[in-house]
Length: 158
Image (cartoon, rainbow, N blue to C red):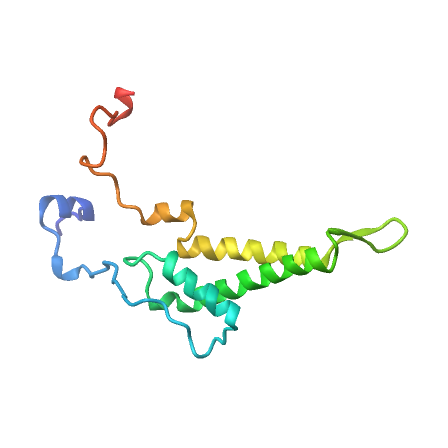
């Protein structure tokens, strides 16, 4: 008869787990700053938005060159959104709804483009950690030195 198997967590607690079977799955810092890519052409406006995002929005310890493509696409979407809103104001004279027939109406095409671009911008910014709620994923836990004295440390003290 063989020895009964024990759970991995018990082996780790007891110190009998075989270290040679564990893989190193720690995250790897890729490093570098995102750069404009040759295979994604950017207009002057898109390049200005790209540079602004890289200069003001990125976290040095989180973002790397690998995010260059997503940031370029984000810059393109921001320019599309801004141009659609500008055309909506200038050409449509603030008409958000267009009459297409006797009793039928539809949204302005520029308004639809603006809404679609804004939704994609929000998704990309969230994916990249550029929104306040997304940055919480990258925040370090609060240590005792950062909490004020007298703060409740568990629900029992509230």
